[in-house]
Length: 459
Image 1 (cartoon, one colour):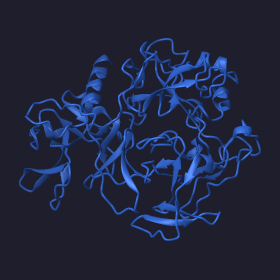
Image 2 (cartoon, rainbow, N blue to C red):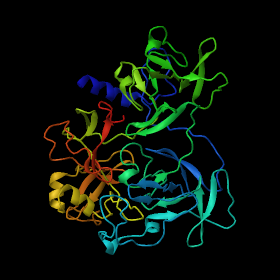
Image 3 (cartoon, one colour):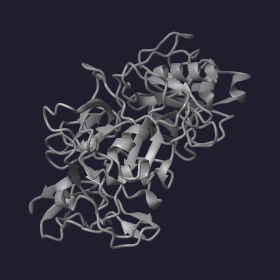
Image 4 (tube, rainbow, N blue to C red):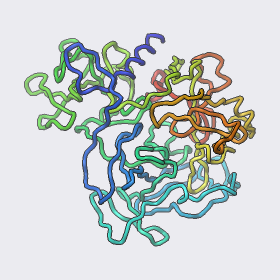
């Protein structure tokens, strides 16, 4: 496992292919400043595309604030979210749950009603005027209150009150795997322009970055250190395991994508001058097995922001996790309440009763014993906005008040505190992964996986 860990560290650091990487045999260099390109399309006046650290390019309002939608998702006992052309996020403050997520019956009183906000208090509708005209996928829809609201691809658009600066995506990210639909709640997601990839290639979201995959099977795409700039050195023997990503005969270079001719009539895509391949031995979509082979790397349009410098990685029985300075696994907390407006309860200013019920039976002190916050040292900074230091009231779990003397300074990922687990006795233990309701997808804790494809966990 130490061998795999060292290879993964090298892959994570190097898989974002720099356009300037050149001579045959040169190692692929890391480039954390590179950003994902996108396909330009008409937008209404004032709207724009902004670069983000975790989601790539997103559509934004005139002030640069990310735009979100709330697509309908099926729960076992009903539906939540919005259908096309039918915005339902309103000013009503719900007082009980809706029984959308079994096994809870409807009518249970929601916590902290005295401070509960309405849907539109948390999700600000992007209003349109009567004179605004449809442009491409952009249109206007009528709200129940009679006002007009901008929509994209038919879904009404909102801004999150969590986002403070252009490029923030604290309201939600596009997700895959656990925590999507089902009994995990219906999440808001940013709207994004199509990535500038050729036919047959797609981009998927991972904890390591925005990764290239085949668009039909979602199998990973790789590059090789021993190739040259727009030159493949993978020939006889090599091609048995590494299949070139073939470009159609009519394909044309576009943006960072170029085409080389492997043999007469056989064309191959390159990205940032690196020829691209799939791995014949990959067993599942979004896998990382090919990066175990020395010199081969998964390919990212942009890498995820670097975690705090004191954090480490650790091998586990299921993969590789992010860990604190002691080697203890880092956990994130996910929570969506069961009201009709499906509010996010993973942020500090949301009700903490859900978290306390899962980790301690209702006691903040006991919860901090079971799932301690990851404490930041004085002066700690991350160098990006994805990882930050926030102040927590140790008595409640809510955000501390300004200047609060006993405030805990804790590390946060996307504005949400991160934790370790007291039941993890040794570095690399992940005893609390999936701890909570529906394996932690509705209300619970999950390990911060950098790699989880060893046992078919999805990559």
